[in-house]
Image: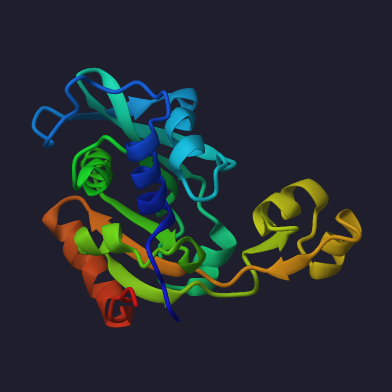
Length: 234
């Protein structure tokens, strides 16, 4: 599979050229010295996620949101949602109480490594946890940030389609199950008659372990034998 430049890299470069009216420190930070990570509101997270993230939507079932601040200005946000337990249990590898990193993005003016700094700092504040997230090849993602964090790659996610594209717009199976009680292709065709409907490809799964030495050692022993080589950008 040929995977080009990621969506977030493209949009960061475009905003850097054109500007987008978003507030940022003056001068913009050159490094992470003095950066502060803390919990934020869903509204604060949305100001970053809706502008920079590939899906361009906020996820359902949000548990917490975290942001990274430079001189009091939020430059990046991540969101943890209720785990998709059906897929977690089906995988039989990730604990059912794992934290699901469902969204994440940083503003175009933030320094290098802001995303990995934000994820790492937030999870370290949560104690003994296992977290997982996905990379979407359609967005040009190979999980570069997860790789920088030394997360383990578990290969493509399991099961059937995780989403459908309806006239080019993604509709998640989770949303369909919650609203309509079914996520079958027949259900999607009945909801969107006459639309161009396609199954979205499976995403790559990454998992990271945080906490004390005993916790990390146990889950590393459980997960590392199941890990695969990192996918690379072609």
